Length: 267
View 1 (cartoon, rainbow, N blue to C red):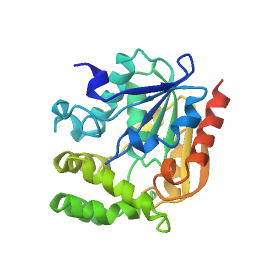
View 2: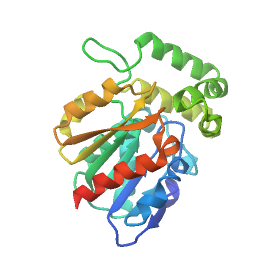
View 3: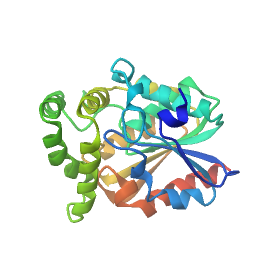
């Protein structure tokens, strides 16, 4: 299958510029990056895509077996890079995609030369000595609610995840994105996301890495950003003056500038 069609690939920016690959998180698609793309595209070749099952991807290529683990999404990334013959790209992953990027770098280390983790979380569940932001009971309740009434869950949770209640259009956009996702596919992606534990995989990261966190984030509290930063010796931690879990929408200028500063340092 043509990976360009399968993953709804979009390429923009400078044809001869360093390549930046932007990867969306749960319940979203590449449109979530639209406010950051213009700044990145001035000097870079920007590649956007949708994971199979999301956005404009080919839904017929989705399988429960493949996408019941983060490795399935990492294979999407690897196949996008291979299909476009990309080398040494900077992979920018939002939310769960930050950990997908870590796994993809294991699969195709020659194709991923740097990582940008936007609001990452390697594990969402609290354990002794680790704060992920949720108890196991919280996650169980979240998944039961999502699986029993996905549209209702989306309408209630998307504004909370987005934050910025004084800007209700942001919460509505995330709600619309969640609701546009096939509920059966979303249920699998949610379970894959919220039950994942990629903490041990952080040890494999050897490429330059930027960890971008928000000052307030109900999904990825600042303790998580500190943990990821400490686990990756080559990483840099930047705290954005932004709230919520989607700074590429709520604070696109600050997000873009932080990524550009990191990219500039790589040259």
